[in-house]
Length: 247
Image (cartoon, rainbow, N blue to C red; front, side, top):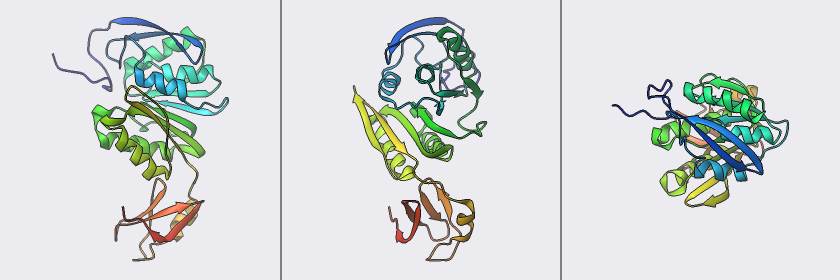
């Protein structure tokens, strides 16, 4: 029998249901899980660390990206956020629908591979990234999270620090211009970045690379010139075109 990842769109493994009961942020949560989703027999240590330490502001738009059976978003909904649950795994989303009812909270459910079917903007995005899918996939999720955050929006991510987490932390610093470690336990760390800047599209069209006069591309918190491979930082909403980032 072939192996299926939990980020498979339509799992074909036999459907076996499980029930989890957990207390998270002082909320008693009941979850129906199943085979074919990530960690179906207990709330995994990484998600638990993120849940217990994440920042959630009531009435803000919150995305549980790669939500699995929805535990992170359900706690955020209990804390007053307006939550969107997204995942590529259809079985996971079926479980989210059940778990919203079980825990008496509301949320929007979107079947999406990353951000492929998400066109909304958010104040808060959480992610327990699929490290086994590769760094390119995880980097893409971080960059697209930046592009789907409102100004002052948060990306909150959890990973095992020595198994890819340190590289993800560095990439968050590169994209957002900031990152901090919020919590750590048993090898896992939660990282938080804030989107301080939104580039005006009209401004982006008229500014040019001071080295070669080519147009610039906005990649996270950096302006990039493809022609001469120069990178320029943005500080306090101002493109620093005389300061070349040679990392």
